[in-house]
Image 1 (cartoon, one colour):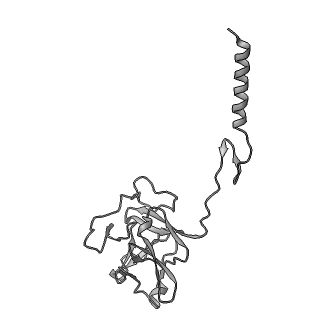
Image 2 (cartoon, rainbow, N blue to C red):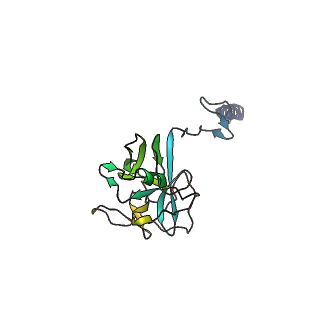
Image 3 (cartoon, helix red, strand yellow):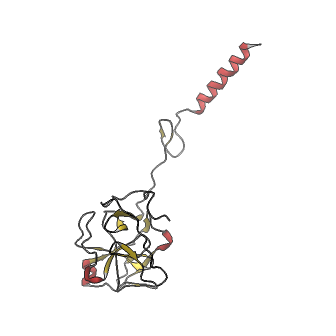
Length: 199
């Protein structure tokens, strides 16, 4: 049995494997301890939305500041049309879609954009124009919920949330689409928890 050449071969193999783990900077990014590191995605060209959950509402859509999105019963989903103009639009601010909308936990196919009479672009979910309420100031506020019996927090499927259940105005869907909550509104997140509605 010859040990000399076998040990030499093992030493050469060890050297070549060590070279594979070199710390050279890969093209397009910096090396991190133990491997490559990806550059973060540039989301500056997008309007970002998320979903949150609480016991009162179940799952609902929020903007990047944690404010809930609302839909208005007097709007029209097909084709999308806002009926909130003038003074109404001062209290109920249209959610602008001047950049590509991206929402974690919301089916991207359900998201759209309508052009308002003043030329601004407004986000729609399932055809329903989306708004924030001027009196909601901090994440977790929902002062507009049920206002005038026509303003409702939006569920991830575009349905309105009334009495803790999402109700779609169409005759084809009347099943709740909310999940049990934790009791407090969750902060925006990059991926919904496992119990979140999946898309």
